[in-house]
Length: 384
Image 1: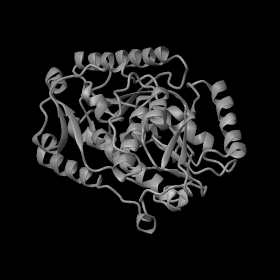
Image 2: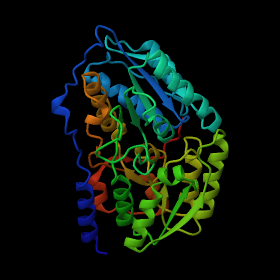
Image 3: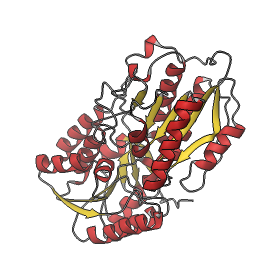
C-alpha cells in the first residue's frame, strides 16, 4: 500500500469520528435546577476498581462543574484505580446547591460474584424501599447488567461499558429497552481503532489477550477484531487471561504472561480493556512489547499511551465523554426520561502517540499520523 493511499484511508477513518450531539438536547434544558427546593441525590455502583471508571467519574464531575451544577474545584490526584475514596471526597468537599453525592451510596462488587449478588440485591432494595436516590451511576458492564432491568424505576445512567449492545445491557443504539435506563454507545469505535492500527502498521498477525468469557469478549471487542481479520486478511493470535476476579495481581500476571507469549508470534498487539491491564501491569506490558519491537495500540485511550503504549485514539483526557454524560444527567434532572435522550456519541477525531516508544521499537511515524495527533508524548511516564 502506498503512503498516499494510507493517508487517504486514515483521513477517511478519522472523519467518521466527528462528534454526534444528542438529538433531543433542544427539548430539554441543561440549566441547574433543584429537586423541588432540595438537592438531587446521586448514587454509584461498580463491578470493582478500574482506572477507566475512576477517570470517567472525574470527567463527568468536571462536566457538571462546567454546566454550573457544581462549584468549580480541583479534584485531588487519585491513587491506584479506586473510586471509593474519590466518592467520599465528592460527598464531603464539593459545593453545590443542586447535587449531592450521597456518601453511603457508593457500592462496589469488588470483582467478586458472591459480593456482586449481595450488593446488587441490597441496592435494589434501597431503590425500591428507601427511594433516597434520584439518579444512579452504573459504572461498567457488571453494574449495567445488574441495573438495566424493570425491577426498579430509578433513572440509571450506564457509563464506561466497552459495548453495551453486545453485553446485552441495551436493546439497540436507539432504545435502551427501559424508560429509566440510558447507556452511551458507539458501535463503530473499536472498528475504527483496529482499522486505523492496521493502516498505520500493516500487521499480518495481530495479538489480543482477553478473558475467554462473554464479558471478556465484549470488553475486548473480539467479535469486531475477528470480523475485520477476515475482511482485511490478517491473522488473530489469541491468548486467554483472567479479568473480573477479586485478586488483581492474578489478573495482571495473566496478561503479562500472555504478552510474553504473544510477542514471539505477532507483529502488532491490540491492548484490550480488562481487569489485568492496570497502572501496575502496564509498565511491564510496555517493556515486553518494546523489547521485541512490537507496535501496540491501546483500546482504552490516551492514558496508556502516556505510559508507553505506541498509539491510540485519544479521548482528550475523557473530557468529551464527561461532558456528554454531564449534559445527559442535567437533562434528566430537567425532566427528560433517560430513554428519551440520544445514546449514540462518537468522540472527536483525536490521535495519541508516544514518540519515545516509536523510537525504541524502530517505528518511523508517517507525517499523516503526526499531523493527526492531538496528544504527542516524548517520554514514557511512570504510573503513580
